[in-house]
Image (tube, rainbow, N blue to C red; front, side, top):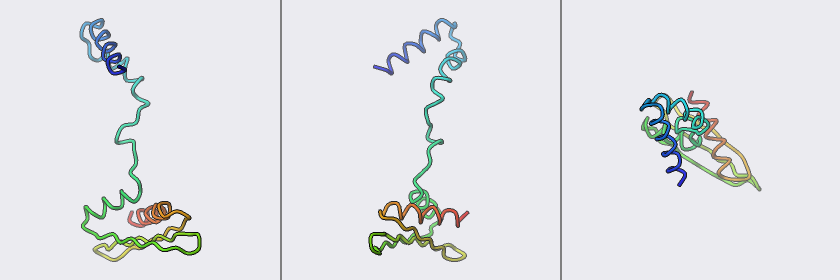
Length: 109
């Protein structure tokens, strides 16, 4: 329903402006600009790391262990010129993995 409404308004502007597509964009661009595009979104650090390692053909090893109420996540990537390792620590496994991935991404830059 909302799409039909937007389409109708765009069509009306196009007709009123004598088929001037630039005028339609002048009206709609400020309305649409607050919406994020795929380029605006950031990948989760662990996914980004996995994609980088996959493209480079470098294996990514993950180890998680519990120490009391904390989870220690250790990520290791084998690069052509050596090995990088990072550890993250948190109560949840996902957050510990995210911390380790962020540290590893920083080390790879």
